[in-house]
Picture (spheres, rainbow, N blue to C red):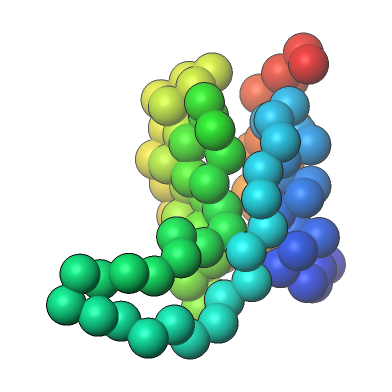
Length: 87
């Protein structure tokens, strides 16, 4: 299953039971103060899930502490479903 980025991040937010802001990747001018938008994949109170090329990095702190690298969206969604987070 190949989802577009927005659908993937929205599904992650739904499974984590949190709101998030989808920020599509665009090129921002970096300054000496490094002003740039943080990007998608930040889930307040839960952690970060970020797509990097063909890999997806997961770093959660709540409801469990978990760090992993996955090879597909479906692997990540299967892991999130296994957490069984009740809203």
